[in-house]
Length: 164
Image (cartoon, rainbow, N blue to C red; front, side, top):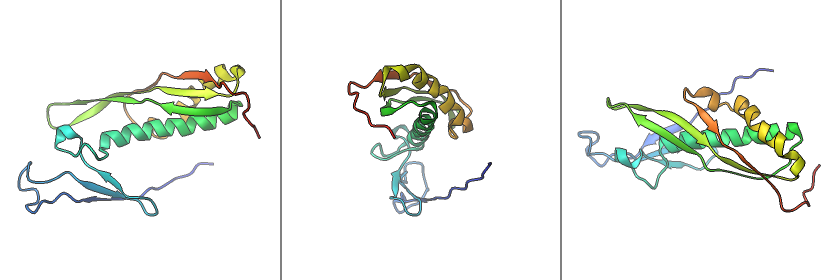
Protein backbone atom coordinates (compact mmCIF):
# COMPACT_ATOMS: atom_id res chain seq x y z
CA UNK A 1 0.00 0.00 0.00
CA UNK A 2 1.26 3.44 -0.89
CA UNK A 3 0.69 6.35 1.40
CA UNK A 4 1.17 10.06 1.48
CA UNK A 5 2.39 11.58 4.72
CA UNK A 6 2.25 15.25 5.55
CA UNK A 7 4.37 17.05 8.10
CA UNK A 8 3.87 20.47 9.59
CA UNK A 9 5.90 22.73 11.80
CA UNK A 10 6.20 26.37 12.68
CA UNK A 11 9.49 28.25 12.41
CA UNK A 12 9.61 31.54 14.32
CA UNK A 13 12.43 34.04 14.02
CA UNK A 14 13.23 35.31 17.51
CA UNK A 15 16.30 37.36 16.66
CA UNK A 16 14.96 40.90 16.20
CA UNK A 17 17.26 43.07 18.33
CA UNK A 18 14.99 46.07 17.82
CA UNK A 19 16.10 47.25 14.39
CA UNK A 20 14.86 44.28 12.40
CA UNK A 21 16.98 43.51 9.37
CA UNK A 22 18.27 47.03 8.72
CA UNK A 23 21.74 45.57 8.27
CA UNK A 24 23.40 42.15 8.10
CA UNK A 25 24.94 42.60 11.56
CA UNK A 26 21.83 44.13 13.15
CA UNK A 27 19.86 40.97 13.80
CA UNK A 28 20.33 37.67 15.57
CA UNK A 29 19.84 34.37 13.75
CA UNK A 30 17.84 32.80 16.62
CA UNK A 31 14.92 30.63 15.59
CA UNK A 32 12.43 28.46 17.44
CA UNK A 33 11.04 25.44 15.60
CA UNK A 34 7.73 24.14 16.92
CA UNK A 35 5.98 20.87 16.19
CA UNK A 36 2.71 20.26 17.99
CA UNK A 37 3.15 17.88 20.91
CA UNK A 38 6.96 18.02 20.86
CA UNK A 39 9.53 20.13 22.72
CA UNK A 40 10.61 23.29 20.94
CA UNK A 41 13.88 23.09 19.06
CA UNK A 42 16.16 26.09 19.45
CA UNK A 43 18.00 26.77 16.24
CA UNK A 44 20.21 29.33 14.54
CA UNK A 45 22.52 29.57 11.58
CA UNK A 46 25.96 27.98 11.77
CA UNK A 47 28.66 30.02 13.52
CA UNK A 48 30.44 31.09 10.27
CA UNK A 49 27.14 32.69 9.22
CA UNK A 50 26.81 34.76 12.42
CA UNK A 51 24.84 32.06 14.21
CA UNK A 52 24.76 30.78 17.77
CA UNK A 53 27.01 27.69 18.00
CA UNK A 54 25.01 26.43 21.01
CA UNK A 55 21.89 25.96 18.86
CA UNK A 56 21.04 23.47 16.13
CA UNK A 57 21.58 24.77 12.60
CA UNK A 58 20.06 23.57 9.30
CA UNK A 59 23.22 21.68 8.38
CA UNK A 60 23.21 19.81 11.73
CA UNK A 61 19.54 18.97 11.26
CA UNK A 62 20.07 17.60 7.73
CA UNK A 63 22.95 15.41 8.89
CA UNK A 64 20.91 14.24 11.90
CA UNK A 65 17.93 13.42 9.67
CA UNK A 66 20.11 11.28 7.38
CA UNK A 67 21.77 9.49 10.28
CA UNK A 68 18.53 8.78 12.14
CA UNK A 69 16.64 7.73 9.02
CA UNK A 70 19.37 5.23 8.15
CA UNK A 71 19.40 3.92 11.72
CA UNK A 72 15.62 3.35 11.77
CA UNK A 73 15.59 1.81 8.29
CA UNK A 74 18.55 -0.38 9.26
CA UNK A 75 16.85 -1.71 12.39
CA UNK A 76 13.83 -2.67 10.29
CA UNK A 77 16.05 -4.36 7.68
CA UNK A 78 17.78 -6.32 10.45
CA UNK A 79 14.48 -7.56 11.87
CA UNK A 80 13.50 -8.80 8.42
CA UNK A 81 16.90 -10.48 7.98
CA UNK A 82 16.81 -12.15 11.39
CA UNK A 83 19.67 -10.05 12.74
CA UNK A 84 19.50 -9.10 16.41
CA UNK A 85 21.05 -5.67 16.92
CA UNK A 86 21.94 -4.95 20.55
CA UNK A 87 23.66 -1.56 20.07
CA UNK A 88 24.06 1.05 17.33
CA UNK A 89 25.84 4.38 17.13
CA UNK A 90 26.78 6.49 14.15
CA UNK A 91 29.62 8.97 13.72
CA UNK A 92 28.21 10.90 10.76
CA UNK A 93 30.01 13.65 8.84
CA UNK A 94 29.01 15.90 5.98
CA UNK A 95 30.73 18.32 3.65
CA UNK A 96 28.97 21.49 2.53
CA UNK A 97 30.60 23.75 -0.04
CA UNK A 98 29.79 27.43 -0.51
CA UNK A 99 29.33 28.49 -4.12
CA UNK A 100 30.74 32.02 -3.83
CA UNK A 101 27.38 33.59 -4.69
CA UNK A 102 25.92 33.44 -1.17
CA UNK A 103 24.63 29.88 -1.47
CA UNK A 104 26.04 26.41 -1.35
CA UNK A 105 25.18 22.74 -1.13
CA UNK A 106 26.16 19.56 0.59
CA UNK A 107 28.67 17.64 -1.51
CA UNK A 108 28.50 14.40 0.45
CA UNK A 109 27.59 12.74 3.72
CA UNK A 110 29.34 9.75 5.23
CA UNK A 111 27.61 7.62 7.85
CA UNK A 112 29.86 5.44 9.98
CA UNK A 113 27.50 3.19 11.89
CA UNK A 114 29.00 0.96 14.54
CA UNK A 115 26.65 -1.96 15.06
CA UNK A 116 26.78 -4.66 17.72
CA UNK A 117 24.93 -7.88 16.89
CA UNK A 118 24.01 -10.78 19.16
CA UNK A 119 25.80 -13.57 17.29
CA UNK A 120 28.77 -13.99 14.94
CA UNK A 121 26.54 -15.83 12.45
CA UNK A 122 24.67 -12.53 11.91
CA UNK A 123 27.63 -10.41 10.76
CA UNK A 124 27.22 -10.93 6.99
CA UNK A 125 23.48 -10.26 7.08
CA UNK A 126 24.04 -7.24 9.33
CA UNK A 127 26.50 -5.83 6.82
CA UNK A 128 24.14 -6.45 3.90
CA UNK A 129 21.24 -4.80 5.75
CA UNK A 130 22.92 -1.39 5.26
CA UNK A 131 22.23 -1.53 1.51
CA UNK A 132 18.57 -2.34 2.16
CA UNK A 133 18.34 0.45 4.72
CA UNK A 134 19.77 2.91 2.20
CA UNK A 135 17.08 1.92 -0.31
CA UNK A 136 14.35 2.46 2.30
CA UNK A 137 15.63 5.70 3.86
CA UNK A 138 13.18 8.45 2.90
CA UNK A 139 15.67 11.20 3.64
CA UNK A 140 18.59 9.67 1.69
CA UNK A 141 16.21 9.20 -1.24
CA UNK A 142 15.34 12.90 -1.07
CA UNK A 143 18.80 14.44 -1.35
CA UNK A 144 20.86 15.06 -4.48
CA UNK A 145 24.29 14.18 -3.09
CA UNK A 146 25.87 10.84 -2.20
CA UNK A 147 25.26 9.33 1.22
CA UNK A 148 28.01 6.78 1.79
CA UNK A 149 28.06 4.10 4.48
CA UNK A 150 31.17 2.79 6.19
CA UNK A 151 29.78 0.32 8.73
CA UNK A 152 31.57 -1.57 11.46
CA UNK A 153 29.91 -4.72 12.77
CA UNK A 154 30.89 -6.17 16.12
CA UNK A 155 29.64 -9.27 17.96
CA UNK A 156 28.30 -8.75 21.46
CA UNK A 157 30.49 -10.02 24.27
CA UNK A 158 27.29 -11.15 25.99
CA UNK A 159 25.47 -14.15 24.55
CA UNK A 160 22.50 -13.61 26.86
CA UNK A 161 20.33 -11.72 24.37
CA UNK A 162 16.67 -12.58 24.68
CA UNK A 163 14.75 -12.93 21.42
CA UNK A 164 11.02 -13.06 20.93
